[in-house]
Image 1 (cartoon, rainbow, N blue to C red):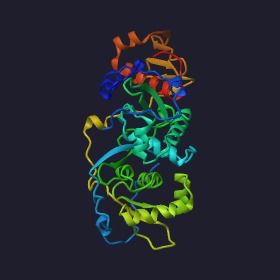
Image 2: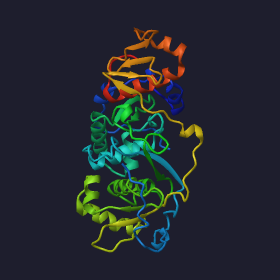
Image 3: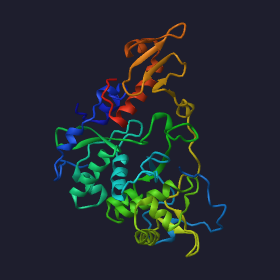
Image 4: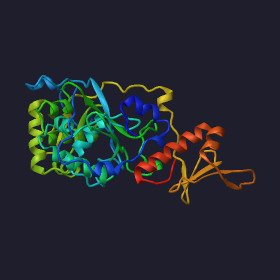
Length: 357
């Protein structure tokens, strides 16, 4: 199926069976460019109470392009099982490509706009399209991106971002019970825009973003040694040190600690002064469904589906299980149908299950 717009994607999102996984498409992905015809774990404990420092702003530097407070943001998955989990050995440039695809995707569905090699190269400010191609191929082969389709007009691909590579019940959640994510600045003065404008490198972009994820989300202060940063970012110690100096000159960070001590920085743009209050509907979340002997059970215990085959059963009076189907489930309980479909589709994306939903 070829998806033409994100609006189309949202329409079929309610029925994930319409989305396919197309590894063969990407296997034939050309090594040269795909031309677009037109371009248009995280600790939230603030360290500000530990460090006594004067109020600083990005205006302390000569680079007035960076706003003091972030203006607009996009969500970046973080925490355990995310691409930034140290347990996953993800190279730095692959992280940069992932971040750019994620920035141009819909958070809930994970589906991106159509992105060609040329467009992604411009977003990353790199000249080598083959470098971007290799990174995309690595991300797909290692389960961080899925190819959703191709735009007929120019051959650009739609991707689906895998936010957390784990079983549904193991997805890390925030205080509201939502999948864990960090609000990262975008737009004018953000590291993402500075990268597009050629004012920073993709290495500095990854560096700043990883620091942001591990910073206090209230104050924007981060405490991290050079060696810790090197391990988290998969960049050399020398590169980390050079990045910090350049980001300081640009006003992206302000050092709060003395030299040769634990590196503590104020990051710019700073987070919003106050945490946005979510509506009851946004905060509403359900605890993970139980997984017992390979079966996922509904919250009322009357339905279950097999993890690998998606074989569906319902419990009759007396505790006897009988085979059922999605049509029957939908006609009886639309809420459980939606929960099961979400889980099934996540498993299909994660493991490539051949079973039909």
